[in-house]
Length: 308
Image (tube, rainbow, N blue to C red; front, side, top):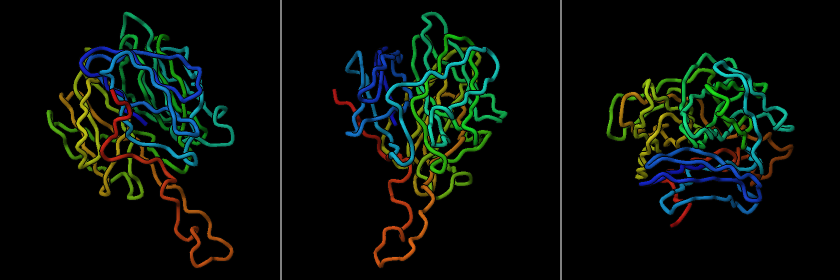
């Protein structure tokens, strides 16, 4: 689980699981950032393409094998109907699993126009618009209903949706409608307490940031674990993403303009504890509940994943 930042100049990048044959690349503008999730192979290796040393890649979390799956090659889940919500069913892509959170790459290959797209859990009444600029790829994530369906909306068929992975049911929770956790404080990091909605067995939350301006104007945005010194503030016109929370379920957000509005729509959690053994041994690991890595894990201070 990554944050990718292009410092100083516009640049081209791509990410894929090691061994993939995908060739999708796209741009990030100067000082722009995006949250994106991608798989690693059995040796924890992914592949990265960058056009400049000023492209920075930060690891902000991971999903263990028991909690989720990432595909070697992306799966096209694009829709052909514009300006209306369309059901997107991923149940045929998850085999015997049941997906709760879908991870996507969004692509706008148009060289002329920026377009809106929207994602929401099936049955939701949310109507939050995200814009994707020309020649961009961006990460996104959204929750599915019990039938593994979410809803997508596109302004133009140039906008493509690609499924790259998922978190299994039992390792994450969501609400059909996102909860408003926006701030009116600009230009500084602000504590955001989500403990009313996120339980104490969670260390991370999923968010969406909507730019409510009518015009396409980039503004600085950041999200980090409370107490972190990580200070990446990237320009955005809307973003789906995730952030770590501390033991009190607090994270910090930064907005440069109040037209950026942040909503939380879900969180990761520990897996249900395994059933007790028939005969308990004095040191049986089954007596201790779930393994500490049995959930998606978000890091505190983000780790630079690419040295230049």
